[in-house]
Amino acid sequence: MFDDVRVMISAEEIDAKLAEMGAAITKDYAGKELLMVGVLKGAFMVMADLARHVDLPVEFDFMAVSSYGASTKSSGVVRILKDLDQEIADRHVLIVEDIIDSGLTLRYLMKSLSVRNPASLELAALLVKDGVERPPTKILYEGFHIPPEFVVGYGLDHVEKYRNLPFIGVLGE
Image (cartoon, rainbow, N blue to C red):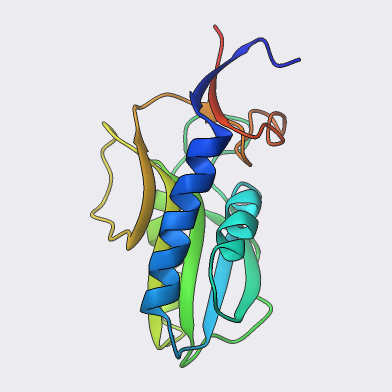
């Protein structure tokens, strides 16, 4: 069905990494109220599966931001398409991202949220793209480092398709 996609990271590898990340989050946020903020659309699968590995009561919220359009490279212009539904002042906020690429969108998002005075603001990302110039970014919970290839699956898309793949893959030429 998806013969044009080469598997980079299997579903089993993803689940094992999310379990590891979830255990660390559970330990670090013990006794605290945690708000996980997913960055739509890509992070919805990561956040759902990561949350299942966090052994704490967790609240969820979502933001939608855009810097890609229909392109495979970030434009550098960030637009907030959907803001948070909840106030985050004095709350422990964990942003959940599918992939850290140029870091421009994330940098904008972190600045935007930090001025709202959360008790803490940290980042979890399933994928970090290596070989890409980006501003320094502190990722407290990180999954896999990948080469600078355009990837799809597990929430990541190409023109809104391939998000439903259970693995991370690379489109064929």
